Every structure is written in structure tokens, then in C-alpha cells.
Image (cartoon, rainbow, N blue to C red; front, side):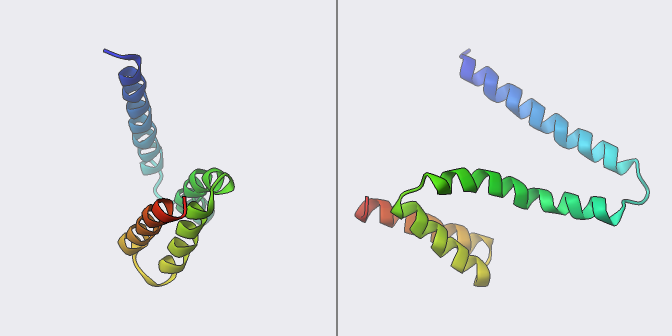
Length: 98
């Protein structure tokens, strides 16, 4: 098998173990401090920011248009509407703007 397969498999196993490990550690506590809970609730936004920010800094006009439309739709619509609007704008803008 290829090296890429083993890298993907190792990444999947590492991801699974960290998720299960975190769950096992947190499940041992009867009460979770509100600050810890607030920190854990902030993790998805922090991860999303680390994925979007580098791409946005090196983005062209098509990506910026999609990012702006996605942000606007996120204020009113749900997650699926936000995703579809951003993807549609990105596809159209890359097709016509370049």
C-alpha cells in the first residue's frame, strides 16, 4: 500500500484516540467548571478560524466574494444554506471572475 494510505490511516487513528481520550477524561468528573465548559464550547470556532484565516489571507476575489456571502447568509440562514450559498458563489465567481 502507498505511503499516503498509511498517513491517512495514522491521522484517522490519532484523531479517534484524541476524541475518545478527551471524552474519557471529561466523563470522570461529576461537575465541570463553567470556565472549562466555556473553553470547550469555544474549540469549534477556534478550529474553524485556523482553517479559514490562512486561506482568506491568500485568497483572490472569488474566495473573498464567497466568504462575504457566506458571512451574510450565516446571519439569517442555517448551516446548510450558508454552505450552499458559499459554494455556489465560489463556483460561479471562479467560473466568471477567475
